[in-house]
Image (cartoon, rainbow, N blue to C red; front, side, top):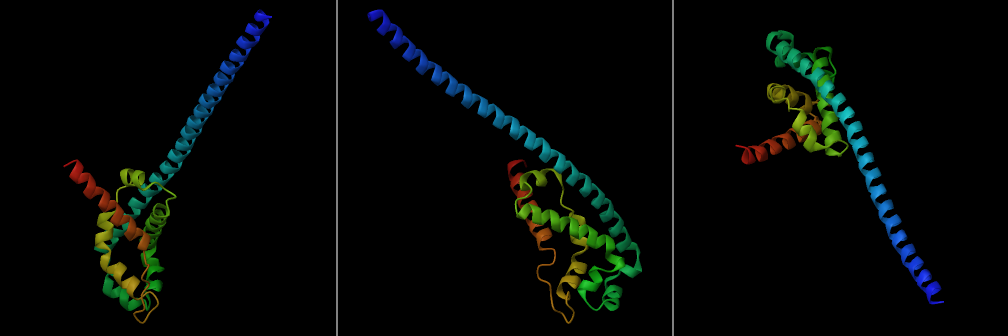
Length: 182
């Protein structure tokens, strides 16, 4: 009888140990599957990011083209454009500003995606440079469009607000980086 009780006691301990081992295996396996899922998600995110980078490269070509036209085309002078279009909206949607609006939509959408956290701000800041030259050289044009969007000097205060927000965040990041990596 003592032998039978010893065997039962041993089996009980073995069952507890087996249960603990099975539980540990399940935890390890779930952790492994979670890591695999995260790796797959990062890979998919990388594929999406590569598409964004490729699109941004295309837009940079438009930036170069538009800035060159602004410098060399009298039709794109601020005074001529103001005379020709009664509202900022008509000016923005004009054939003369087709590239300008294409560029703006790209960065406005990118900025909105970052602001709403559909895209990771830190990562985008690292891989896509902000188009400072375009932003600086189009300041007057943006002002004319936004302050007279509806005509009669009625503004569209949110004109390119996501683009502006993205610029602010990009420059904040660069200031922080400059203090860390002088």
